[in-house]
Length: 390
Ligand SMILES: Cc1ncc(COP(=O)(O)O)c(C=O)c1O
Image (cartoon, rainbow, N blue to C red; front, side):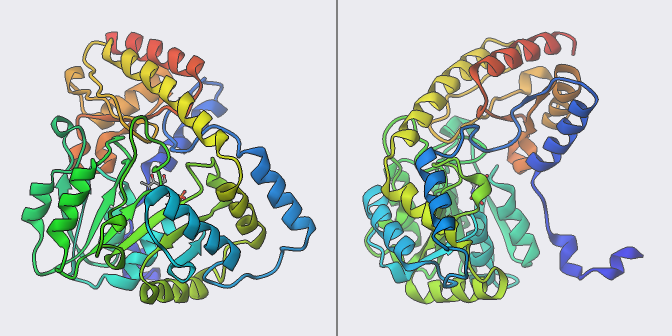
């Protein structure tokens, strides 16, 4: 009955289990329980001081008014230089749109490109908002299975077999959430070969690009002929520990950048101006904090992966990027959701069920190791003990 109050499309929108589990974990903490948080996907480091100082200075200098919807030009120039350096992509500042976080790039891509009935290929398991937006816009979901035996990399042959004349968009995410899988340059080249000349756009979610443990990530937009057909999604949340600042950007062709700008004008008007000034400092200032954070994540990765592999019923591949472990838990004999609930209630460890990232995530948990080594060790001990009681 009450549902009649809302537009029909609201019933199609999904959510993100990380925020739901965080709420449950907080409720347990309020009852005095100690919880180790592995659910939320954000660096536990503070934003580097030079970036915070730049924001404070910008406030003092009066950067408190509207900025252009597309983004403040000096920031778009800094982003264009940054993507040349880190992604080998030649972008003009006119091809950059500054938005509040990486997520809006997904939303704007769907709003600008996808009609009801269009097919969208996306990773399963994958970031839940991809599937949510596919349903929201009544597009046709075409999942590609991401398998452990393929090191959690997308199987390009499977992807090719799913392309039809109705494919509008393919979503890539490397390094990936929730698996930590990283596509090789050969994978990226093969995807480009599969889509070139077919009028298919690629949304390349590169938000974890800086958090890789060996080698570099290749952007599909760096391949000749692909830039006009790629939407790069990137931002400041993960690389610079700036999740709460809400600062991200897209790189697209100029025409699509204008569509995204129109969507910005119709929704946010602009990103907070002093935040944009701080973004310039993040990109052009010292990068030591990023490498220190990645080195610390690597230590934690090794500890959590080794620890998980020593627990009966669990096996875990070493993730090559991002800060998520995605252990196989089929040996415990219960489902991902049951295990996640069991660990939260019986071991005080908040983790996410792999299946909340798509049906192919069943049999796995996602543990965000953006937490201290001490806490990781406590959690490993608790998981081992609790599983003996299963
Ligand atoms: C794969 C992926 N893309 C995009 C985002 C969104 O990032 P932001 O917080 O900048 O909107 C996240 C956040 O967790 C993510 O995991």
